[in-house]
Image (cartoon, rainbow, N blue to C red; front, side):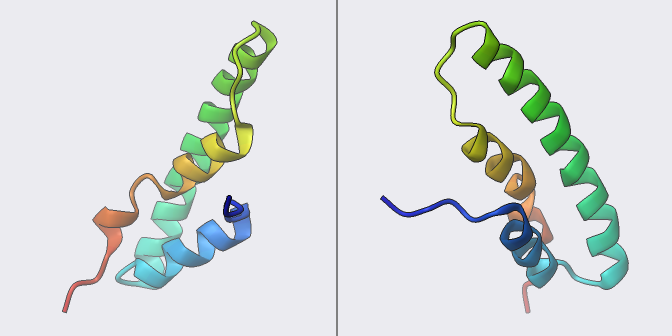
Length: 73
């Protein structure tokens, strides 16, 4: 099984596909906020006994808008 990218790698991917530095900064703030909320909720579920992969939740939250940021030629 392949290892999930760490937060830093997720942010590098986001930066690679953003159309500008300004766009990256705004998108980074957004996805970090989404990740914080997602991890908060995931931890609550884990405390309630739900089997949940916190790394996958964070990675998914950080990359959830990646397709929207692609700079198509």
